[in-house]
Length: 98
Image 1 (tube, rainbow, N blue to C red):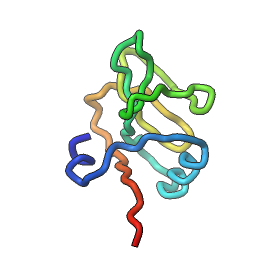
Image 2: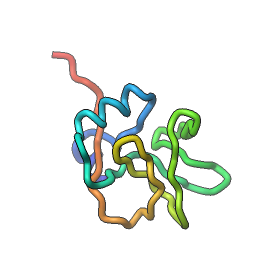
Image 3: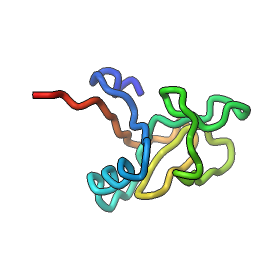
């Protein structure tokens, strides 16, 4: 997360299937999962994006396992993983009008 902030960006937060399709096209045939801006701050709050909005599990499927509280993506799959896993990440920032 700090690396994205240093780049005046933030970890990826998916809003819809179009964004997921765009990411899949940009990262073709990924071998690794990539960290995104999704976490489970507490069980009662549920899976939450960095901006505070809740994960819409009717829109995005989450593969969960064990004591995982950070989200990662590969292709169509969002995986709940332990936050200390050594994965690359995807940052996003708003478009700049030229």
